[in-house]
Length: 96
Image (cartoon, rainbow, N blue to C red; front, side, top):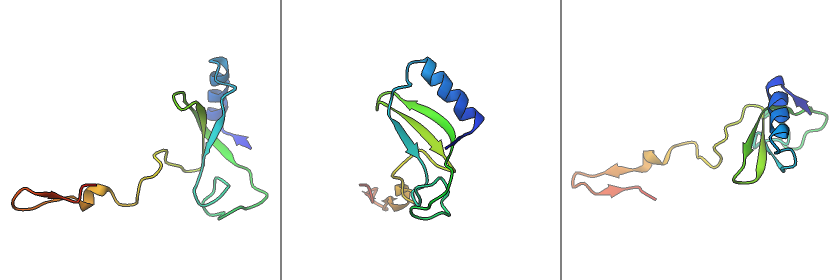
């Protein structure tokens, strides 16, 4: 595992603040066990690079951000707002 300087600094700070024993959630591409979306599935012989580390204190874990990752899970490719409409009578359709 490789830690970018920013991540190493954040890890040291979190340990000093008492978060060192928390479980770690790895935020990575959904397409691979690596941090590289081009290495599909379960590749072998790769290094994973941690770019940033954050505390999710309410959830009780640390998040290690790897590769090019967005931290808003579960969002579709098209916003739900695209399905909402208001007809000429003011009736709204397309809401959940």
